[in-house]
Amino acid sequence: MSLIQSFKLVLSPPHRAATPFLLAGSLVGLLGRATPWRATRLLGNAGIAFTAFCLYFFRDPKRTPPPRTDLVLASADGRVTSVALVTPPAALEMGHTPVWRVSTFLSVLNVHINRMPAAGEVTKIAYHAGKFLNASLDKASEHNERNELRLTLPDGRNIGVVQIAGLIARRILCFVEEGDRVEAGERFGLIRFGSRTDVYLPPGVEPLVVEGQTMVGGETVLAKL
Image 1 (cartoon, rainbow, N blue to C red):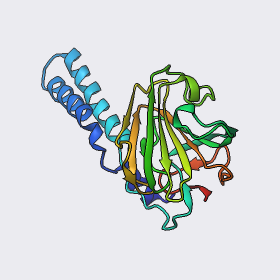
Image 2: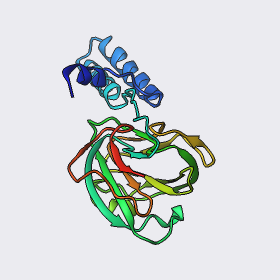
Image 3: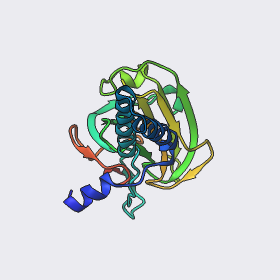
């Protein structure tokens, strides 16, 4: 990534989901800094720091998906922590045959906007309350709070996408509903603050990424259909 691209990434405008946090932090910062008392001025400094963090965390850079329609794209920024053959989540009704799952871990420093891996129709959404274990652990797929989506492609095949909360994350946001038609790279949610996103590929489709690889949501190619 060039220096100019890094600058654009850091200075990207925040997603609208940041609004209440920015307002709260700015209010605390302004009121705290406006008083003569040391304790409240320190609180004001904390409010300013929190506002700056939220501007960074909720940044929503523009992404340009590849023009091809036969690709599966990364659903999140971050680092691939697992590429494994596993059975898809039962709630998504994608069968019992093991398929390839690519797990991407998002630290608090990553862009947290989730994006659709391909074009299709959202045919299933299943939310599960759960624990808040370290999202990089494999068991987080079954035990953590998570939101599961099934994306049905135009040819009838399915892709599973799962938003998983982590140690710090306490809120999963999903912007789509069952029946919505979406495009590859389209924003569909985010997770506050630090999380993981799993993508379950269709049967017979193999991943093109490896553990440790860095993902760019909506742009990095996970697999070819």
